[in-house]
Length: 77
Image (cartoon, rainbow, N blue to C red; front, side):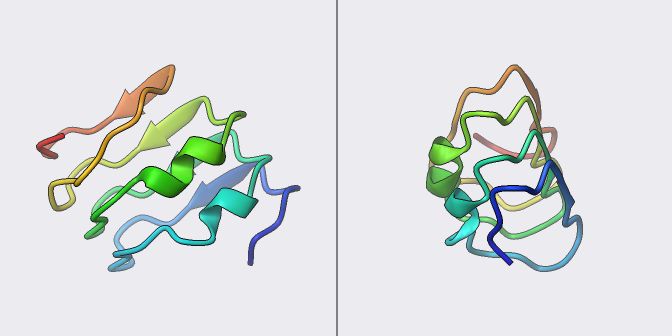
């Protein structure tokens, strides 16, 4: 699935726990990972084109990141 051509990925409510491999989707600009069980956002550090990130309504994250537009509601980041 990793592809540098992806611009948008909507993966809300899929029970995702690991973002490993997502670091190869370097073209991502919009990413919706809300309502999942993500434990670390470390792989997102490689996504330098990312401008919108939604990680709201999931389990608390072990590490955070800084993005221009972020929704982390209901997450204890």
